[in-house]
Image (cartoon, rainbow, N blue to C red):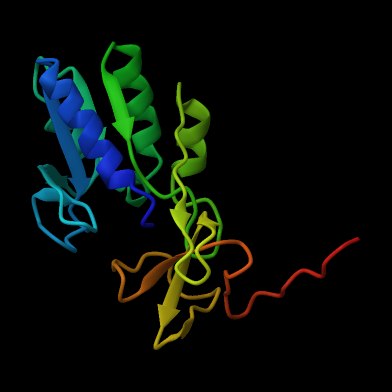
Length: 183
């Protein structure tokens, strides 16, 4: 979180629009943090999107002539998003997917591991640790001001009130044993 994934998705969608390509942007309906029908960055940059509940619904809403399909928060879809993305790309569409590769437990998030393997190109953005300022790759979840427990539910929609970007050194998870340093 807070690495600029949504900003990059919006930038790439707008770039394709400047090139006069037909672009469609989709988002999971479950992500209604800032707006029901817009991809919205944490800084307030917005782009119109079609909210969908399932991969099947997403596929049914791809219009004839669409050249670029963008999907925000792709980690919230089931693994059938992998098959759809591959099929679209094989049919000549440009497919741009943005999402978290890891959940708050630092485990692969939904279909992301498989999507990363199927992708022609992967850009991994890193945030800044909100604790120490170093580069951060982990999503730290807080519950009542404390680190989340490893057995908490994976999906909890939220923003700065629940999540922070953390580096490896500052990341904490209740119920997880810290590894001993090896030398």
